[in-house]
Image (cartoon, rainbow, N blue to C red; front, side, top):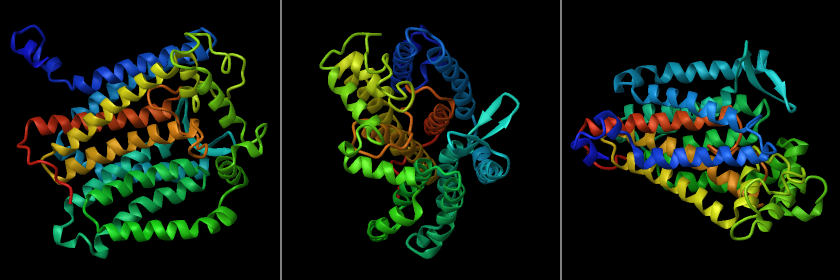
Length: 378
């Protein structure tokens, strides 16, 4: 693309776009629209067309984020985090209830899930905090306590909704930034050990009944195949029945005959593999690998700690969505209601992932206009 720009064939602003990420992203979103077209019974409504419209609208938002100057981002980081935190608090007061949970704010026709926005907001705030922390303080309590509060405050509000999956996602992005900032490894190993030891207490005293059922189903999916284990059992049947090349576009039986629950959201990957087979699954994994590889490349080429941590945290957030959803539909993780990026129907998750893409494009643009010093973690 740069060669074409040099010859005057392609305008320079277009040539400088990160096509190594954009092409896989466009292919993935278009393929997702085809899968949603089939999940909608061979119709663009109600899933495929809104999916494409959301992507176009949120692409504009990502482009706006990508154009932001560095100093402006540094200035608005903490105010933006505080605003999202206040939105989470507002959910507890005036939030809308759906599916047994209170997670949304509604203003006229606009419906927002603040917990989704908090995922990139935490990453942004953590990167800003560790940028300003003197290197000599890494490894002291001053490097943990303020950062821990940035993570714990939103997690506490999200758990009240209740939404365990989103809480884990927020924690994952924040902990990745802490780890890459250079905190001692033994701290994380100690925290992991304490978490494992506390699991029985969490299971029996903190989890809701439906959350305990998810864990039990994960450990023994066949214990209740017509109840709590139904989703995973049908997902495995859909994936296994696809074979190498699948049953053919719009020919899935598990989704079309309503055996597979949520074929357009949480279990869209199972719905896709049934029709497109192993080759379709490998295509989707390849597109994700290219996007994540580009995100890590942006982080590794960043010129300062803030950019490196921000890009790495944004990439980790996208990775969490992908990994947990794929593990879930294959029965290797408890069902958490985590959508698959750019394939599942739903605006909140796509907004989060497009914010992350916008942040990565922003850092990538900064990298082009500043000297590169290599990976700045630690």
